[in-house]
Image (cartoon, rainbow, N blue to C red; front, side, top):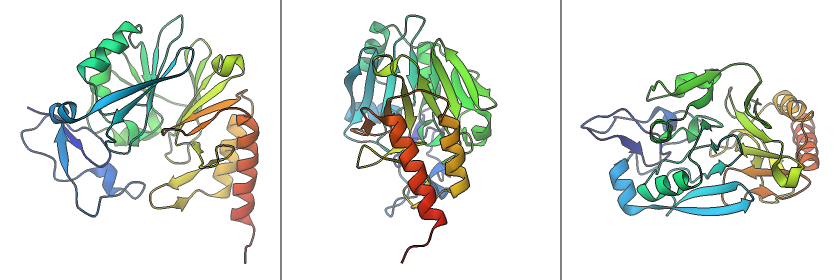
Length: 271
């Protein structure tokens, strides 16, 4: 039986002859049901109409992004290390070409995902590359296809490799997570942030939202706490969720400045 995928967000559902009645991810107010209504495809249909684009951003860091855009349109990253490769975030399309390229680059030893909007077909990536998926336990309720390879962690940080640390910041989702890569940005450190820390149109700024499509903000205290959680970590670059959304340098200052401004605007009074 086919695995159905939500066209709007890319979430995959258990095998079934018929498509689901609805997508709980889209019906929740951090996402949305398109005006045209919920629609579905299958993994096979998606592979017939789309392909994955690859881009190397720096040594050992490769972006994977589906063209034409599917679902939310986020990018995943394959991060290579001498002790194993990490897939950060996930996209719905896993086609034969992608499988071959990933295997040629050393495979995947672990998968980590920032938040439920990017869970997509994580179960299929995990099975194909025989890799565990690290998800924060606070977001367990949003897993729509249970799998033995899904590993739920608790607390505010988790080491998943040498110099690779998952940081739970919360915000957009209770378990919202970023990946700190100690050796990124030529040794100055990098964050792979999904949209837990969203790179803005001005890439010297970042932002934080409870719902991006519905423009619902976070509380000032939450943003302040997120900033405090990042403060002990060195990073000079941020790779965000979408094409072009990268803070190439000065990222630590960008976060500090953006947190301060966000809090100021929420707690102040504007005419």
